[in-house]
Every structure is written in C-alpha cells, then in structure tokens.
Image (tube, rainbow, N blue to C red; front, side):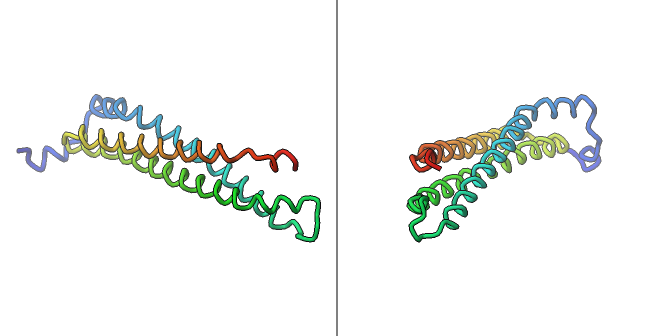
Length: 149
C-alpha cells in the first residue's frame, strides 16, 4: 500500500502527456457534442420563432390563418428537439467526466479503465439518443405549410 507522501508526488511530464493522449478522443467527442448542441439550439430557436409568428396571425380570415393548424406539429418538433438537447448535454457531461476521471485517477495512480469505458459507452449512448430524436424531428420538419410562406 502506498503511503500519503507518495500520493502527493507531482506527476511527471511523461505521465501528463500519456494522460493527455488518452483523453484526446473524449476531447474530440466533447467538441463534436458542443457543436451539435449549438445546432440543436438554433433549430429550437427557429421552431419557437415560427410558433410566435403563427400566434401573431389574426384569426379573422387572413390569407395565412391556415398556418394555425401547424402549431401541434411545431409542439412535437419542439418536444423532440428539447429531448435531443437534454441527451446531448448529458453526453457532454459524461464526456467531461471521462476527462476528469482520467486525470484524477492518474494523479492518485488508481486504475480507471472500467470506469472510463462505462462513462464513454454512456456518453455515446446518450449522443445516439440525441441523434435519434433529431432524426425524428427532421422527419416532421418539412411540411407543405413551410413551402407556402
């Protein structure tokens, strides 16, 4: 068993470079998820803007009053995007935890392979769930009413 003074030893440059090399893939995944979150937020903003526009249309026979029937579809799209955003953020958190666990376990010289593998699989599963919800949203995104405005 290691004593307390051995745990306080500063890691060498070689150890740090090994840790950084090991977290390169999760770091790229984190960057990709961050960009994906940006895409989701812009799509949510477009759905909200469209819903606000439709809510502003008067009901008294306007030539665009038919768009009011589009509100349930916009609500479904917003729900899918909201869930996709939740899963993407969860994936980003799990990916950040991978990096944190890798550094902490290296500093304390603790085996972390199983924990990191489980976190990485969970991050990828939540990212896949986010992609699936985005795919479901895009299936209902294009509608005849979108082409008439």
